[in-house]
Length: 158
Image (cartoon, rainbow, N blue to C red):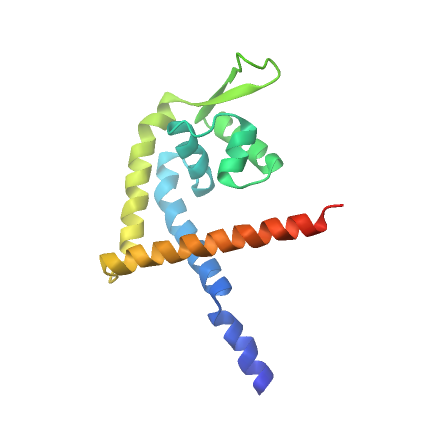
């Protein structure tokens, strides 16, 4: 019986609950973004390009915290779907700069508004202080996880 209780308890751990919440948020966000031609995974790229935080594949991968091959695939889909274009890098002929198309730039504010609304609905019943605390706690959790992941990567290098 003790083994079953501890197995069920794993479903109440922060890792499981955060993962479940992330999947549910992603499902909600995908449904809202799809009519605009965006996917939830593309959001960090769209925001980075719009805010000029990054404009190369390498920098976008870093910004979005995904591996280069995954970023290359995402950018190829985004280019095919008319969300981005590529221009030669004037400083490095081997590289290209990624640019948002006018279509993506036009639809992005609506996408952000829809996501803000979805987040507001998801936090229904939370006070402003609770929502702010929740965000602060998640931010700390992510920093801890980043630190752990970096330590793991360091321990596996030769």
